[in-house]
Length: 475
Image (cartoon, rainbow, N blue to C red; front, top):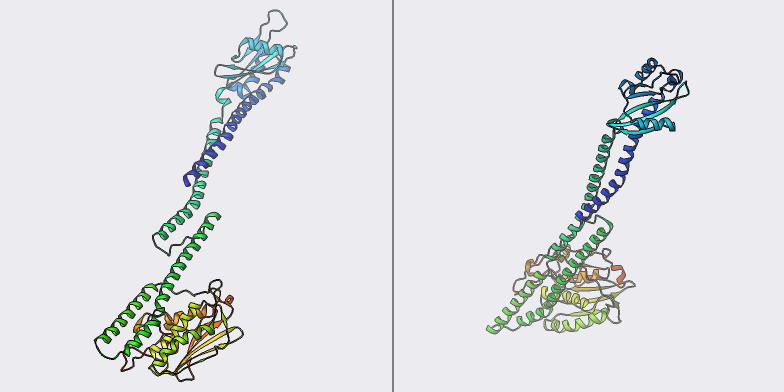
């Protein structure tokens, strides 16, 4: 494209220069010729007063020598013979014009020019005192006719060349401005195709290429977002396996002693490690907020009752007292049912996983005008540093944590414009408060309320086969 623009500009400029330079050169040549002939005619006319007074040779010779052309021996005066007997024509200076031309001018009495060897001769008739016609001849050499023409042509050619070079340079710069953004766009497309997701294009250049760069950057951001969402989905699906794994682990712990029981517990622990590995591998990108899709929504009371039916059986086996409140009437939330169920499983699963058997817990649902608050409380030992526990929403996987338990709950809450906080419960342990907004429109990207997040500290309890902590979120 760059060279095409240069060629087009070169062709157009050359045509314009030729179209103007050739006529202008001819005009300059004609002007130089007219100037030379006008000067010669003026010098010939200068002898008119002298010829009207006298036709004697001596005074006429002095008059001829006084002119520029006469001093250069380029002027001649032709006087006819007098009407007296024995008189002869007088010729002063060197004659260059043909006698026939002289006779013609004397007959028509009009200024005339004729080509002679080495130049041109201007012949001007003039009336003398004897009422006869005298002729003044001025020789104009060829170099006088073309004086200054070559210089003017050279200057004209220089200006034309400068215009051509300038137009080519300007076209080249314009071509670079158009080609470079296109090359950067093509390079970024190749990099994105090779898997370099950070490839972006500067939004500069002509408006069309600037629009293409904006569209490409938006597409690249969308690709990164889609890949991140896929990783989050894989991590979330893997994390949901932790709920049945928790049940298997607790059931395996009650099998007693023996080779079969030990093998079962070892298999459950190995399966849990593999699930944790899958979660950490899938969750490589920074988590993105989960937003409810079109038409997504569920009844929070129904979901709480359903999940508590599942966990109540396990709580009865471990001797835990369970209390559920606030689920008598339906409350619609702008959250997909599987997402809310996964968040509740993460909260309740951590109560079983990180508190001793026999620890009581409760789930309370409070319905307000613009939000629903879900409180999960327990009577466990509590969390030493709630703020640090919240920061573990981006866990690095220490202490056997995957870093997704709190993150799942937080993203569900933030998708409605809410947040998650940890405090002390009336039961003496930990209380996790999940604030869920009833209007999904307040959860626009970049405008969601952010909960306080902190890192969870876990304390090993003696005599147990797994680490436990007050009902802190699993990370």
